[in-house]
Image (cartoon, rainbow, N blue to C red; front, top):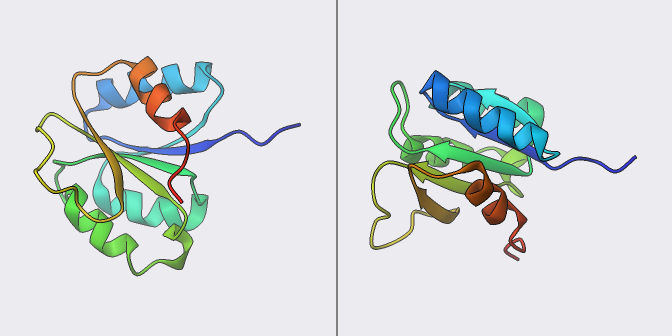
Length: 120
């Protein structure tokens, strides 16, 4: 049995989180959930995801702070980060961010981005 791609979905909006999780599961991904940045940092250490779909603006800890915290975690070294945000992408991509997707976006758009060849 092939290993499924593991995605950590970090989204503070419960409805959006549920919609994306169902869609990604239906398309064969193993989805782990976090509702805020602090929870995401903890989940990366225990779940070791292949990708993080990271909402940028969240309570407790925003996406920028999540990335700063992950810099110190060896378990996050190979994780690719895809930002999903209602805000437009900044002129310069934050460190470790593979891409920035602007909401609203479909599950198919998320899948297309995950399925793009990994960065080296």
